[in-house]
Image (cartoon, rainbow, N blue to C red):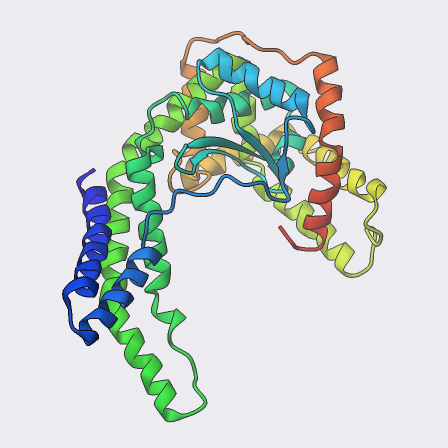
Length: 348
């Protein structure tokens, strides 16, 4: 919290000092004041924007999907999702954006398609669980500071400045500018690393709590199998890359029509279903050996699965019926077409 406070106060101090120079300084000081204000504006905390994009679905477009998400949110006692996005990726995220901290649920279609209906409920339960479990990384204070630091890190990266100029003077100027940015870049890198290390334990605890809440909503068995599916990401990537290569060569997916899109996701489901149990067990052992996880902010996946095995088994509080399954599948038809086109043309 202190580090985040220093980050925010640094931006405020830079803006206040720049305004003082503009009001009280001489001409040259005012020039520096204007430059300081521009820098302070570029370094402002990033809260994210709540806006529709090509992956967004409105409530009118997907009422049954929103209805399922609302049921999961109500079961956990948290606010419903203000927006649901469906992307081509093999993951899912939940976050808050903007000053009003409105919630955005992002569902990766590649992951959604290989899960069973009850595993999908577990996935939603895990994501909405982050709204309840007190994950301090997602608070406005820490998240905005972290986002600002990430922006600082990118802006001060020397590689953004160094370039082979058309003449010696421009080349020397870019090298000099990169050298001046080296120290700010390293300081920003160290602060980011410190924030990551200090929030790592609490962040991983939040993931375990989200898994526990998912088991409460969808059952322990469904949550466990959903977590096991995360270890198959390499198989999913392999299939999608293969089909993309075939399309790029003018092969099986030559025409980007609805039929070929459905075939892509159906082939993905069939491919994952064909992975034998022995291979699935091998993937789990490899995951345990490598201590692999979704990313550096998540606990090792095999430990998340082990927690499901040690906890008392829970029955599902929410069960999808056939009407929900068929209706949600129909609502995602256009999203499947769009996501398949993005995958096959390398736009995702």
